Image 1: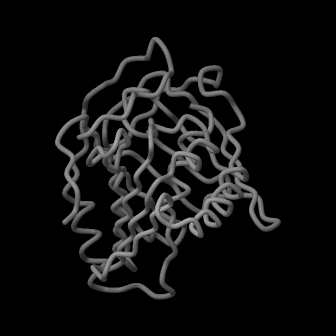
Image 2 (image 1 turned 180 degrees about the vertical axis):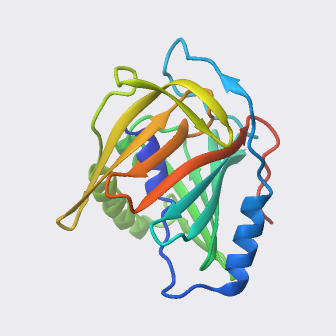
Length: 234
């Protein structure tokens, strides 16, 4: 579980437009308002092994940057294919709506494995025609895996999740006892970014309950989650 979570998220990161789209801002704020604070409490886990992926699992997170810009991201396991699983990342913010579908040969356990088992990526921005990269059918796409390896190698979790300090964390999705608190460091193109994340194995897919950059530029928190009912965007 040490590097798996950052590796998954790294492939879903998207850029932002230079100015806010008023329609997207209204839609994103409206979507955020649909999630109600939940009072459930999740007990301290007996172990910190991540929950195995299964079709139907989903989580919803809210990210807020230091300018007050909001993004809502839903991660879902939406299907199985050839022994692998499709992970869908649906991100809506004040600028764009991105949907990325990733076919993994199996649930990755490390950053390098997240690249090695990557089979296919389908991306769609603002409802435009989707773009597909099929790593099995296109040998040239292997060059992208080399780039992904560089990104994955730049992500370091500075504490083993099982041995990390434990803290109780309350977010809109509920209260999670004894979350593992771990530092995450990303070094790309001479720039190092540090953040702190809290993980709990009751949360499917990534285990992520909360996160914050050490420089105060962004925070992320879990709004809701479930182990059944996920469906893919049309």
